Length: 152
Image 1 (cartoon, rainbow, N blue to C red):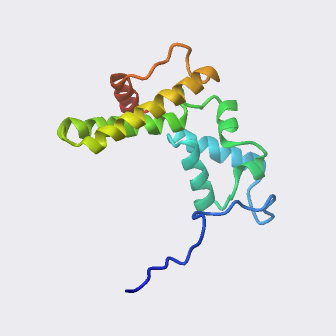
Image 2: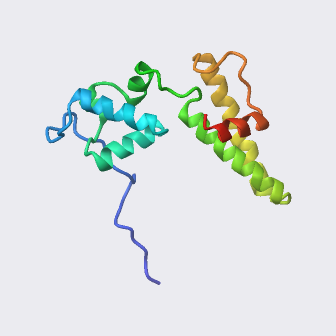
């Protein structure tokens, strides 16, 4: 039997760039301007980082501008009301609920939905404690559907 070998060992994915990349052509202000421009195109912070890395050759915004992407967004008052990780979990929950409406006997997905909603509740509790969400914010399936439809 032939053995499959992918060529990678250990962790997959890209490596963090060196502390100061001397070959980056963009300055501090240009990098921040790009972050703001991409944020106006309705991109999340993680997507902005990927676009800057892949299309503009900026390996790390933090190394170039000495600020995180979320810090740049909050300084320019473009930070979304709901944090990106929570929003992505809400999108997954809405999709899974739609699947469950069509496939009522899918017990594995039902368990997955329970675990996902539990994770959402824990994350909401954390963000309320850190004051990134309003004090009375609670997870509700219908509310999540509305949030996902409006885009955050």
